[in-house]
Image (tube, rainbow, N blue to C red; front, side, top):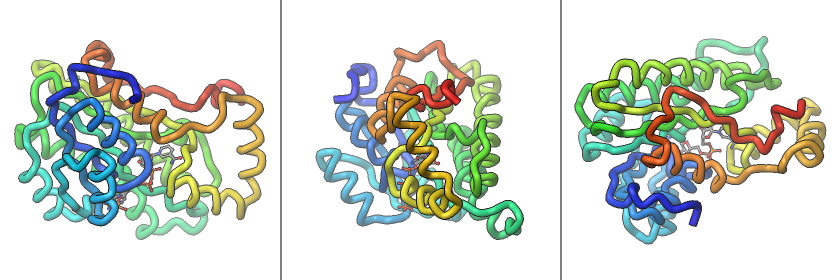
Amino acid sequence: MIGHYSDLAGKTILVTGASSGIGRAIAIALAHQKARVVITGRNSERLQETMQAMGGEAILIPADLTMREERERLIHATPALDGVCHAAGIIHPFPIRYIDEEQFDKVFNINGRVPILLTSRLLGKKKVNKAASIVFISSVSSQRGMKGGSIYSASKAALEAFSRAITLENVDKKIRANCLRPAMVKTAMYDQAKAYTEAVGAIANYENHVLHHSLGEGTPEDVAAATLFLLSEASRWITSTSLVLDGGLSASI
Ligand SMILES: NC(=O)c1ccc[n+]([C@@H]2O[C@H](COP(=O)([O-])OP(=O)(O)OC[C@H]3O[C@@H](n4cnc5c(N)ncnc54)[C@H](OP(=O)(O)O)[C@@H]3O)[C@@H](O)[C@H]2O)c1
């Protein structure tokens, strides 16, 4: 078990991107805390696998969150929430000189626009309880350049900027919002990013640096552990901030 937060037992928490990687690890970790977890993603089969790994108990709502009707269906079906973790996202590496509206929208939509609109509608529909905690999975890329990752970095930076106004506007309800900034974590997204960085000749340097100058690579469970902390009352005084999860990598460059 990744830590133990007794206050999470019985809390209702929505996890997006729960069909894979980091979102799946977060959903499983929440199930171990005995939270009531609402899981969403596009792929129903992989969501079912997540639910099995959670011990068979979850509220499963498949949805393509870039589609307004599907977001609305999710918001309607979800019970009032004590926590939300926005983990859905894509990387889609692309060189700056070839960015067009289609490429821009593809990345910004699910990484930036969707978590912003979903948060807004959940608050507007009174689906966010008092003292709820909202966690956005950002990235170290929000603060750093990455070949092919310019739109990805921009989308995560936009998300972080948005998150800082949530408590300001909901201080009466003591709603908190924080971001996590992981470095690269081995998931399906890692493989996509790796294929691109290999093609532009940057991966060997990166992996060598991680090996010799940091605590090594992180896992989805490392991100889940930090998410549990931010969702629990143990972090009740922490809001509108971003936590770096990179084993010391950014301090060593
Ligand atoms: N892996 C890393 O190195 C790393 C580092 C820093 C930050 N992050 C961030 O961590 C989050 C999770 O990434 P990951 O590594 O776990 O990636 P992943 O394994 O590729 O998972 C991405 C998740 O996003 C969901 N998703 C994508 N498009 C969607 C859409 N249109 N509607 C609904 N769900 C959608 C996918 O669900 P379906 O396929 O079922 O639609 C999947 O569950 C992302 O926000 C990512 O930017 C990852």
